[in-house]
Image 1 (cartoon, rainbow, N blue to C red):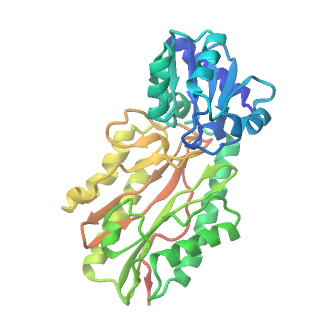
Image 2 (cartoon, rainbow, N blue to C red; image 1 turned 180 degrees about the vertical axis):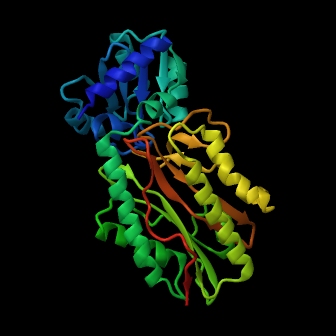
Image 3 (cartoon, helix red, strand yellow; image 1 turned 45 degrees about the vertical axis):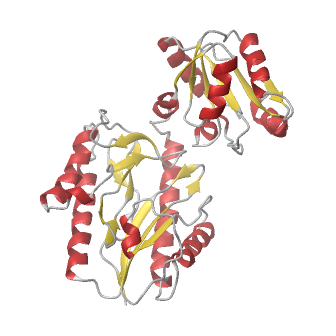
Length: 366
C-alpha cells in the first residue's frame, strides 16, 4: 500500500525544486519502495504520479487496472485500452490535475519511446527524476537494514554449499541453476543464479553466457543475489577448480587486498571518492590499474543498483544507514577475471558492518 510518509517527503522535494509532479514507472524497485508492489513492465505505459501537493494518481492499461486499484487505496486510477492512444488518457489526467505546461520529473523506468510520444501530444517539460527516488531511500530504516542482513545471510549459505557442488564437466548454467535453487532453499526470493563465468569469460564483468564447461583447471567467478523483504543481496566470490597458479594467486590476493582496503576506508563520514581510491590504489600500485575498469561499488536496497554509487565522481559522504557494495576486480581479456564483492552498511550506530561473512580466502576445489 502507499507509503504516505515517503510521498510527503517526495512532494516536499518537488515543491522545493519547482517541479509539479514525479512519474514513477515500474521496474528498478521504485514502485516497491512507494506502494509495496512492482507491476509487470512492458511496452504499455503505466506509472504512479506524485504531485507536489501530495496528491497521487495512477495511469495504466486496462490490463493492469484492477491490480492498480488494489495498491492505490481509492486514489484515482486512469486507464486506457489497447485500441486507444494512451496519450489521450495521459492528457486527461494531466488536465484534471493541473499539470499542463508544468515541469514533471520522470524516473529511470519511464521508457523513452513513451515519453517522446507524450511530449509530442502534451504540453509539459520533462526533467530528470532519478535522484528523487534514490536520494529519498538512500537512508535505510532499521527494518530495511535487517532485511539486508537476512538477504546477505542467504547468499553466504548458498556460497558455502555451491563450492561443494562445483565439479569438472559442469556448465556455467548448471552452477547458475543450483545457485538459484539454493537461494530458494534458504528463504531467498527472486534469484536467477546471477553471473557464473569461467576463465576468460570472467574478464567481462557483466558476462551473461552460460554454456562454457568447467575443466580440470578452471577459474570460476560467481556474482549473485536474492531478496528478503524486498531488499537485495549481492555477493561475488571467485574460486579455482584445481591448483591455483602463481599468477592466479597473485591476482586473487591483490583483489582481496583491494576489497579489504575499500571496506576499511568505508567509515561513517568518509568521502566516497576516497573510498573508491583506497581500493583502486592497491591494484594500481601493483601495475594492474588498467584492468580494474569499473566503479568500486553501488548502493543496494529495493534495487540491486541504486545510490550511493561508490566511485570517484560521486561527491557525497557516507552516513549511518547507507548500504552499498565493495567489489574490486581485475579483468584481463581472454585470460582471467577475478572479483570479490561484499555488501557493506554503515549501521544505526555509525559502525561499518560487512554483511557477507563467508570466507574470502582463496578456495581451490581439488
